[in-house]
Length: 467
Image (cartoon, rainbow, N blue to C red; front, top):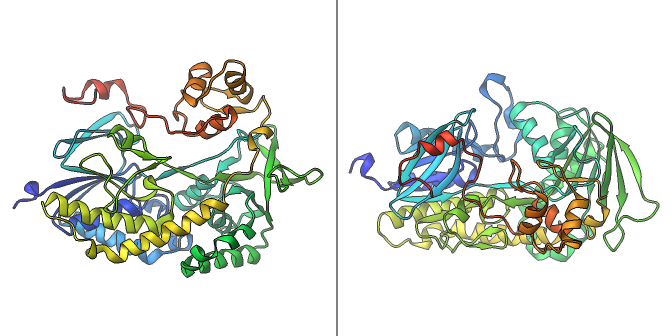
């Protein structure tokens, strides 16, 4: 059988899940095309600085470095033998078709003005997630960045977002961001976490099943002590201050009702605020292909198959859970794809260890998700003049008017009345905030395209291109 006669799998995303899936499928005789928007494989978790920077110790910015080395070396071997074709700097904007007839459309290069189409027998979505940031007065000031954005600047660009930082919001991501910034030379004035760590005690059984994660958390705590980072639990950022850029933030303690306690406000000078309120899955491509969502996550079975024939999903797209979970899901998905494309029934015993890891990791992160939630009543603290949709400059007052006076009962109606979510990011940044202000559930918006596409690329598609 020649290389072109082997069944062909298109993997979208070269983070932990996509790499594990591509390697598992390629090792079992499947021809794999791995498409990724970044210039280097690894995703956000294994993000690397460009070779031109000459980083002498890039491993200092990572843990699980040996795992990354195994993935990187495996990818190099498989691309060298032609089993995997790695298309870096390819931004997938649409996927369509069915088993044996899938077409994955991407934009190539920094300008993103050249279209590329990959034909495949099956598609595996490892599209990762994106950060949720809830607005507050001053959040649009220069110097306010997402927690993951600060991490990406450090890992990928070897630069600090500022000299004095406050890391705030909620969720496990805040710990590695604060410790990395401090280790790189920034003064981290405070780590502001709205959750109460004591609430984790009620989730002890699920947490105790992951001693490695507990040890990792203890290591981060020790690093915070070493760098004298002040930790403010059950606190939240009330407002960011500055004229041309960030100068300080006001934080407040949270009462039992989740609202700022009277008299607890304090002002912290800083030039950087790295803020995040958890993660959400990227599901645009999955919805375009007809995959069902469970809440905000792509629904999959024990083989990581979606309910759209010929489509698998793994990693953060199926639920936020970290690199170890993504690796396990990717490995299972890659093995399942290989068996199905070769016309044989998969043997779950072959991935039993990965399945056990998947179960434990899901239980662990379900416990964390129950604790790390945005504080109650956060929409009440947003002033009417606070910009919520940055792309279209829609304020909280306009959203409240649409929901209260005009009777909008869902995000889509608010969007039609205010243009919130019609901008470049298509509601990814403002969607949860708009839903919270309008008092309606947040549901991902279904879009035919996952990113903006030049008209010239659309015009150049073959006649069987996307409708």
